[in-house]
Length: 396
Image 1 (spheres, rainbow, N blue to C red):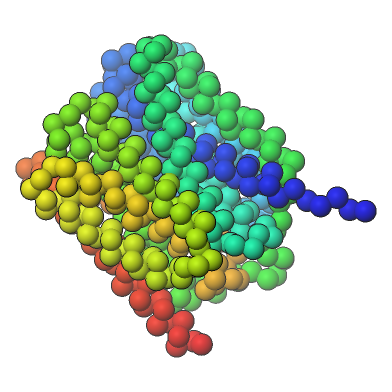
Image 2: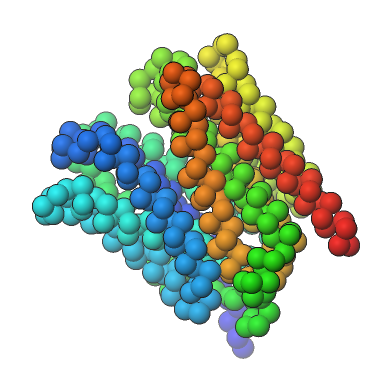
């Protein structure tokens, strides 16, 4: 008698995969001032670290459209954990042994960014390919673990630095590296199914020729932009609006934002069978635009903070919801579609915070003006969803 496959193990591996991605994205920024004081690296150079991280992710997203299916999900996703762990380990050692510490940091960043990019492309289709009944809810719950990972990294690191001192950051880096290292063995042994059999998925050329596909890409760009614009500037906004320290700003800004985003994903994960995904995303898009307006226009600082935090609740369903919509509307998209969606989301998340910062600088350092313009992203998402609904009706 054949033993039933343990897809629960696949779930756990994917959850830890997104926690690994959260570590990669959120831990190093906590060390920027430490790098400046310890190695004498200028803030101008330090600003290149997130740029290199997201650029590497974008390149991996694009490359994965070509190689992920050929090499296979298991090898690629296990490799994502290995290079993520290796990047974090080298972060603790390379700056000390390289002639130029900044070069060592960038090498480590590129390595764990490669892992992060592979996680983003592969983990969603791995869950999609599992024989779960409630795919929408499962996808939302999966993506909530990025939020909990971000909260865990920020809180855990803050507590560690308070107790043991920030000078011991290398020990904490090695501790965080244990998560992807141990998760490698989960991905090597858990059941992993193919999303589509050979020949069933659309060739990339045909996929790119679908108007429906480009509407989904537009939605994903706006989802990434709506999320990242507030997430990246939440700490600075909280500090300037409330006049608090950076530590309080980190906890009240990005940490609170991530908590609300995770709550939204868990709630939808539990209630998705009773909710219409498109209508829910439309409502969240409108709510997100209102949150940006509240944060940027409210003369009362606490209302601005509420807009910042509740924005996390509004954007929570956007990224995983767009992935689920894509699976429903374009079931033959295959791994290439998931890779292009990850690329689109990362593109939105890379460009939008820079746009907010540039517009704020142009208006004399007024961050509220930058966030006001960012309200356009959820508005465009809503328009895209409406067009997507009409496109499907015409084809029906």
